[in-house]
Image 1 (cartoon, rainbow, N blue to C red):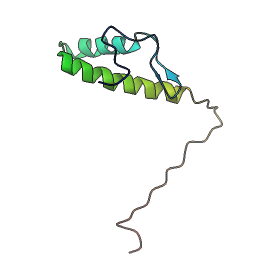
Image 2: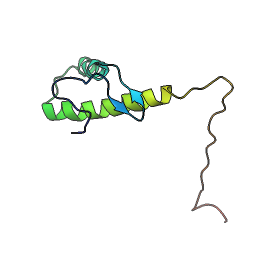
Image 3: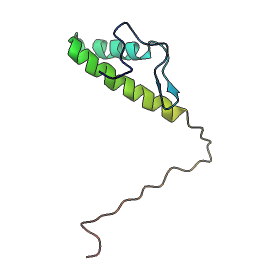
Length: 87
């Protein structure tokens, strides 16, 4: 388990890189997953799901925290084709 897991419920706010999750947001998403797939998860499955959902929600919160305007350009993609270039 990771440091943001709490067996007694969600902490007041999970913090990582300045992004905060509202209390209970992870639990709401877990309930939606259980309702959508119509099953009860084992404690091990629930623990892994909680870690994954928490990470996804933290990354989404970090992205939302970046101030953007309509004038901001998308980041350019750059890649090198090491196998096909130069032939």
